[in-house]
Each structure stands twice: as structure tokens, then as C-alpha cells.
Length: 226
Image (cartoon, rainbow, N blue to C red; front, side, top):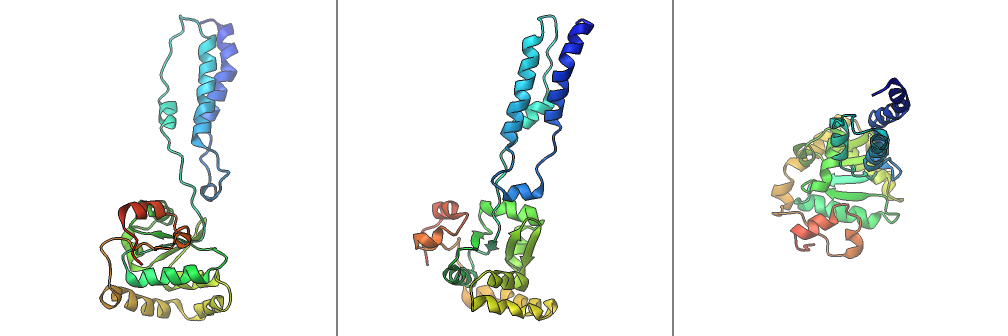
């Protein structure tokens, strides 16, 4: 390869490298429908590499690009929604609480996800929690980098409801250790007192099911229950 040809290919090689080394989307992009698609990045990179191939002669060796191959396998990340309650789907007490919030939340601000479903996994990873953590204290993902558990999560959910329910969030002034003591006492005994099911409980009403981000998955696994 001559020096003139190397000079001619240098700008395109630089452009391909810049496409591969572009930074990943920030945490807030996971909550936005405008986040860049990895497929767009891969397509742009592939186009640049294709342009290089057109200019090369047969005597120029072609090498595979492992970085581009790995990027081509990237799966589009699930766009997470704010205001999601991740709860124990087999618990009768939790199920009753979810039904109550859905009926009280006339502005439809709160959405729900059963912790036993695969749809809950991105939210657990975002918060650095596992399913056992949520089974002990339910999770409310308020937004990017902002989540709550236990009694604090319950009061935060109430703050999103219209009056008079939102006024109950004033109990936030009670010291957290005291609130968590009461919460944990009930949570540890909820199955014995209120009962549990073998699989996630599913609502019959279609308009209520629309509030669940994992509704299709739960419907495939479980018959309508309550």
C-alpha cells in the first residue's frame, strides 16, 4: 500500500474508531424514549467500514474487527418507566394494596410490576437489589437514581395520589427506624395473616391490567384471579 493511499484512508479510519468508542447513554437515557439506539451506532460503524472496503485494492489484507462484532450483538436496552411499584405478586396483602392504589390513583401516575416477573429485573439491577430484598420490603422506583423501600416507599406512593390520600404522606415526619419497625413486623407475618398464592395474582379488569408493565407475561403464566 502506498503512502498516498494510507493518507487517503486515514480520515475514514479515524471516523470508524470514533463511532466505536462513543460513550454509552447516561442513566437518564434509560427513562427516555429518545435514547440513541445501539443498532444506529452499529449501522453507522458498519457503513464506515464498508466505505473503507470499497477503496481498498485486492492486495490490501482485510481483518475482522472484534469490537464491531461485539457491538453488533448489543441488545436494545429496555426503556424504564418512572413511578413503578415492584411488589410481591403472590402476597394477598400486597395485591390488595395494589388494587387500592389503582382505584385511588385517578390520574394514573403509578404503574406496577410483580417482582416474580422477568420485567422486574431491569429495575432491580438499576437499584442494586435482588428479589429477596423486594420480598422483604417492596420497591418504588420514582425516577433515575431515585428509589425507596418499605414504609418510605409506601408514603412516597401516597404523595402521588390526589387528596385526601396524599395528605397521608405527612407521616414521613415519623422517624424512619420507627416506621420500618412497624412495616417489618407486618411484612414478616403477611403470609400467615393474609395468605399467599402459588403464582402472581392477576386482576380481571382490563382497564386495571393496563397499569402493569408486566401484564402480558403474567397473563401468559396465570389465570385471572381477583
